[in-house]
Length: 197
Image 1: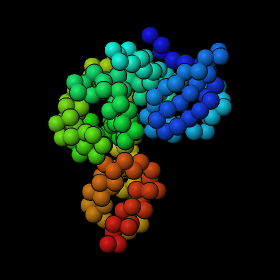
Image 2: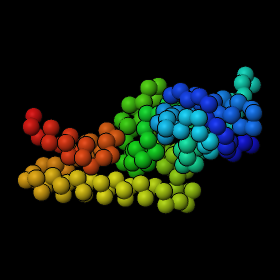
Image 3: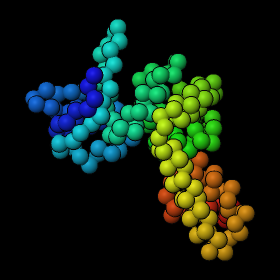
Image 4: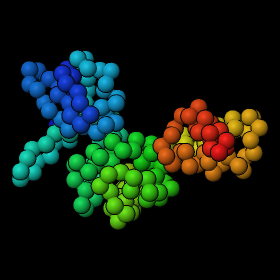
């Protein structure tokens, strides 16, 4: 198993990267999240976590900017009916933080918002990933949720200081968090815009 590759990032596209390691060029399929992280590292030496998939019709190499992203990818492809391309689409449509939040909230709509994911598949993802995350015995899920809860509290506090009522803004902050907005200034601006309507 190829766990990771270390080399020069020769080419980078939203769904593909070319990494040169000791004179050999490796083509890796990637998610948009990995592309975003690596954009500033073109023609630099980098480390990429990998998963090598052997199929009857192809040998495929997938690349990830973080171990966390790779872990979620492996759990996704372990779900019946989800292949590598669909797993990459999920990671492209939702950040790891958004995935954790959607799992915690059992938010089927968040996964349905991804192209190619229907209601049944979204429900299956939530059911199976939530259980698998629990068995990992890691604090990653609670850490992510705590970060989101802290962000929520900070945003609400900021809006209350601006003269808005807490009960009026809580639901709107939740709505913006579910949309994947995870910066306090963007949340506050978003709520203020909604408040003007």
